[in-house]
Image (cartoon, rainbow over the protein chains, first blue to last red):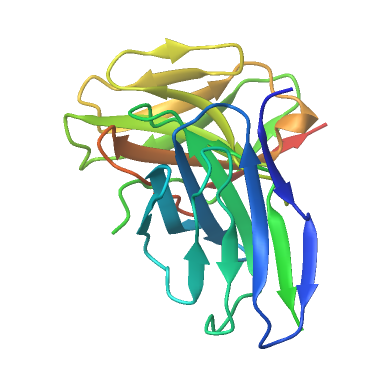
Length: 112
Length: 110
């Protein structure tokens, strides 16, 4: 059953703690993306990666970090430097040079 | 810098066609029109995309005007499960991200 998985669906953390969100895909897609969505808003790009061991900042990368050690995985770490981390986080992937992106189910992060 | 303009909300009767408009008057020649939808608290779902010609798939039809400055997504027989926020996006196939606006909230009414 191919697709993109994100875990966990809901995540609660205390202020000041780093937290890592998981994103895995078995679609053999080259490119992967992380977006953030706030209530009533569209999606904003945090980071993207077109190939393994390479990634670029999106519009709102401050306070976040990523890694791309494997083609299938693109974890996002929300650091304590992110001033307002409570949001809905969405991971997506696409074939290289084909820009239809497919999204995972999302992780809702709440920082208490 | 919004590239698309969509009405914030629309209603449609169940079983009728839902026609969702999108204006993209500044679209460039190499930019595609993409449509996604997002049901509450889920990831966006790809619906359809096109460049110049009208497109149809199992979910919807996309009608793009000849000057490409606007388009319409058509859900031919709307069901309650089509209630969602629909996003129209223009993006060249040389870019790396989609710019999602606030979309159109479609409510299908029984």
